[in-house]
Amino acid sequence: MSEPYFEIESLIELVSEQKPDRPDLVKQLKQCVIRKWIRQPYVQFVSDENADGAGLIGESIVIEHPTEGTMVVDVLKDGRIGGIEFVNQISGYEK
Image (cartoon, rainbow, N blue to C red):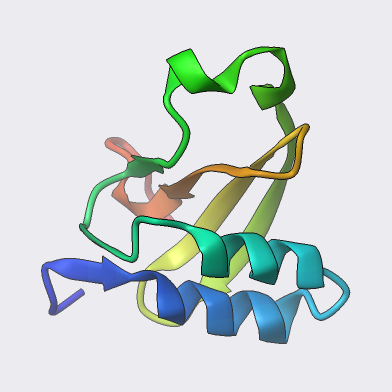
C-alpha cells in the first residue's frame, strides 16, 4: 500500500481474471461513478437511503488483490455494487 488512493480499474482487472463467469459484475464496476478513493476499510457505493428493499445484499464476492489482500465486493439483490470491503484494513484483523 504505497499509494494513498485505490483505483477501481485494478479491481475490474482482478474480477475479470478471478471471476471470468461474472461479466455482470465487471459491467457494474465499470459503471460505478466512484473511480478512485482514499484507502479505507469499506467504500459504500449505494447509500442506505437509496438501497430500499432491492438494495439488500444478495451476495458477497471475494477477490484476492496482490497488495491489498482480500477484498469483498457486496452485490445488492438488484445487481448494483453496494460497496467494497478491504478485509486487511479492518481494525483487529490479523492474517
